[in-house]
Image (cartoon, rainbow, N blue to C red; front, side):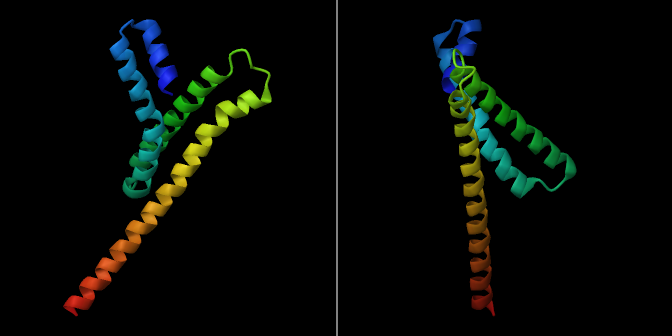
Length: 125
């Protein structure tokens, strides 16, 4: 993501420091953004408009990752099934891993909250 973001920007704006910043922002926006939108959906998506916005944001972030990887991995290999798999599988696996970790974090937070509530009840009761 860093390479495709910085190179695409650098082709339009010949500023090396800005290209580095855009490369970093592309990673943050796409890959980390996807995880954060997913976590926000689980914790803050209480209204229909909030859920819609978060789902759209998740799709955009996923699209950036997939299109960026395809653009980097496929030139000269368009007919190679492995090249397609190499371009698409890693970001999808990373997103799946992030989803599992998000679920584990939410369960841990819920358990900690329940333990704290039980502790406070025991002290005050």
